[in-house]
Picture 1 (cartoon, rainbow, N blue to C red):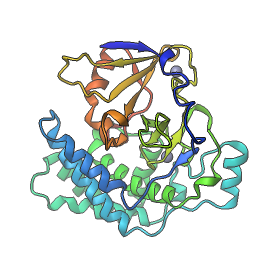
Picture 2: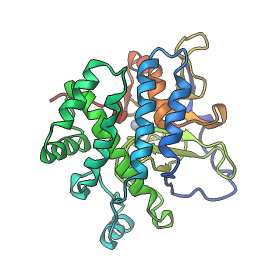
Picture 3: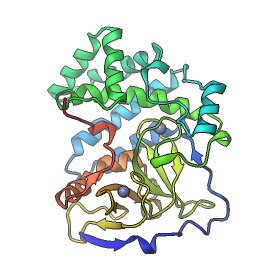
Picture 4: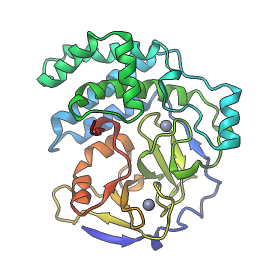
Length: 312
Ligand SMILES: [Zn+2]
Ligand SMILES: [Zn+2]
């Protein structure tokens, strides 16, 4: 791998013509459609082609389910107050906020079952979910939202995560961006409190060169200074690791931003080098970089929800 230190990165977003907005909320009419197209664009020649193709279809299903979903989680004034005065996430990851609407989204997503080419474990997971009671499904949602996912349950968790992405991203899309605080501690999503799934450097004027972190649950982008660790907030030992030119897993626009203080990394994507960058899709498609970073002893700061597992 090739390395550069963080010094050249620092302050590179200082020259923007406008103060960067604290959050860029998702556009629910485009989000999953864009993600589906980006995932599909990765398929050709990719070592995980089959999986990315399936995820692209799942994202198409999410777009359809989003169009039929009409009960976003809405914060009251008490939640806005907690956010503005105490830097708390506005719509925290918790099942208390959910009603039966999320299970309708899940049921919609499970109709992917009729696609002929699903692998057996996926089909099994769908049948299992379709047979479960509302209480059992809510318990699954709770475990996912609190990071308690058993590695054996990944196929079912994928659908639960996908349904909750629809709920949280549509809830985020309905918020007033002007009411957000500048930053929350430790780089967590100001909407839902998730750790970032990746970072992206925007390419379009007037936010060219500005770095935002991306939420894998609610698809909010939130401002975070360049060359600062999103996990421990240190800027002392930031470096960038990229794959070698001749590495077959190379994707030019994605690097690992590593922090020598906490030994973690976050992937950072440069939109200017790959127009149409979609952080969630590109994170999944560049898992080769994660493999190389893990081999080099770096720990990923937060899992992608579609690849999430924890023991126990
Ligand atoms: Zn979020
Ligand atoms: Zn750190």
